[in-house]
Length: 497
Image 1: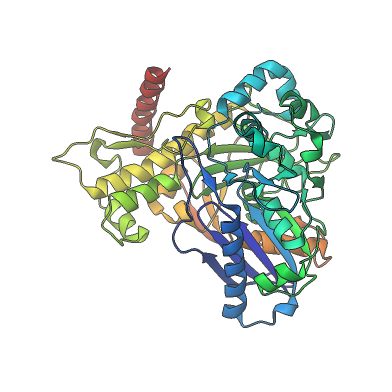
Image 2: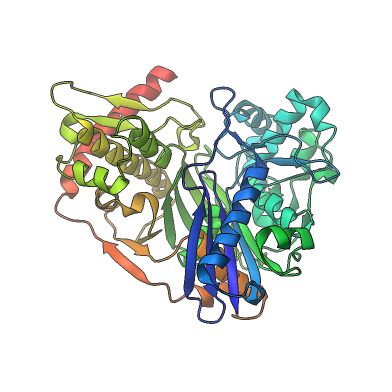
């Protein structure tokens, strides 16, 4: 008996096949091999075609079955992880009305800020733990203001994972975790954020019905089963946003535990057992996958938009054509800490919440034509991303977070020794690299609602640690370069104000 998990990212769709009883991973695939197309009609905009996600989900599913050679009838449960904060709109035929406005789109910043002030900052923070900000609710308000005819055709709005679940089951549902990530959940009243919807003049009937993150959420239709290569009636038993899911996959489920990811964006995610907010809304609180009304589990989330996408830009625009990341790492390792004075600020992917929703762009600083080569840019890019992580972690520390160990997956930026060592030295804590990823986590979590394992704590209690990076003798050097980088950022922020 097996479980299948999908991770719906903005770069690619990843899939994993897991043995239901032993929880061992059989196969992993992704589609496409190159980054998926992102539509940017204006600066700060980011959209994707939801049907593109479905196409690659189907490709991933069929590839997993083919590679593993298993009987697809033996796949008994499905789990979904998905890119957070996106907006998908469908009509009564359940067809998309427009491309999805995805997580890194910045068009609704002003809308959210105006709502924050109009509804009242104290009310928003006390009830939503966040400003409406540039999240799903504010993106929907943008559509209402700018695409009124289309808005009137909306049957339901949903998050990216809800859309994929709808394609699978034909049922339109969302979760409390999903509503919280869209700033559509009232923690005090334990229901949808009706006051915000009313302020935005958004009819409540546009909300999907609620279901639990870990529960039977519907079954594959005949059409979906055919497209996926799976059995009709296979149950969908888990869904969650990617950062909550990634933390869960790393075994970060209890208060005080901290996870991080370094994909297209960078995230630090700490679990709390109490409601907490940052008055400046640079850090955001969301419902974690194991949250219960009487047993609070919240995720305190720091997001940096421009990390992996910055390094990908360096690779695609500056590195030699076809060079793999591991060769860039080898060349960067030949350059000393600080890249001989070259510094990069990785803020070129829209408004950054930890910079108070400001869009300052990326900066390459102190480039010397007679000194710096491609390898210096590689190293400065990796260090700059680590510095951005640390800048955000310092904000988390003002909220009382103390990182004793940082748990990360064995993929993306944390495969870089330069990046991981720099960050470990800056936070002065070990970084454990765990053998997992979002798709594996989603597949494993699907086992709980099927009754195969008692709870998700039991499922993820035996994660395998692949490596443990600890602070080393270079800590002082990394701190010194960071202090210069932080001054660069302060100067740029002052100029932009």
